[in-house]
Image (cartoon, rainbow, N blue to C red; front, side, top):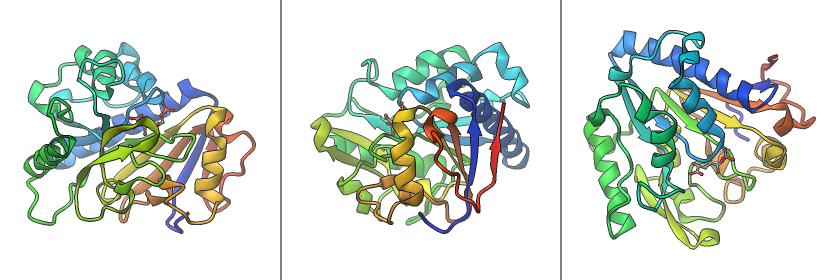
Length: 263
Ligand code: 6PG
C-alpha cells in the first residue's frame, strides 16, 4: 500500500456504510457548489452503492447534511459493463432505477458511458471526449472530480481495473476499453491517473467476502497487477475507506490511520 495517508471508518453494516457515504456526498457537494458552482462525481457500480443511491433519492437524504443541488451536479461513471443501457448488468440502469430517475437532475448533467457503439474502443474514446468537454481539459490534462466512489471486488479489483488486465498499465488515456478475460467481455473504465486526480476518493466496502482483498490491498506486498486497488492513492486528495464490520472481520485497521467505529 502506498505510504500516502488514508482514513478508515468502520461502520456497523452495509446500511451504515451507505449512510456515512451519503454524509460525505452531501458535505462534499455543498462545498463544491459553494466554491465552484458545481459538483462533479464519478459513481461506482455493483450492488454495494445501490443502497447509497436509493438513500440520496429518498426523503431520508435530508438527515445526511445539506440538500443536494441536483441541478448543479455533473454525474459520471467510473466504469461500465459493455452491455445495453437497459441490460440488468448495466451500472447506468441500476443508478437510474435507484436514484437518477427519482431526482430533478438535468438530463444533460448525466453522462452515461456509451455502450451502444459497435466497438468498445470507440465508446472509451467517446467518453474521454465527454470528460474533456465537461472539464474543459487542455491536451494532457486530467479531470479533477470532486468525489469518486469506488468499490472493491473480492479479487481486489476496483472500477473495472481487474487483476492482470491491460488497463492497469495505461497512463496515457483517461478512459479505456479493458478486456476482462474471466468475464470474456469488455468493460469501459476510467484509468488510475484519473481516479487518483480526484479531490476525494471514497471506497465503499461491505461484506465478509471482501476481507481477504482488504488485507492484501492494505498489508500485502505492493503488487497492483494482482491487487489493483493498490493503485488508488490520490496525489493531492483525500482517500477514505468506509468498511463494515463484516468486511473488517477483525482485520487491524492500519495503525497510522484514523479509525472511527460508528454505531
Ligand atoms: C462494477 C464496479 C465494481 C464494483 C466491485 C464491488 O462495475 O461492478 O465498478 O468495481 O465496485 O465489483 O462490487 P460490490 O460493491 O457490488 O461488491
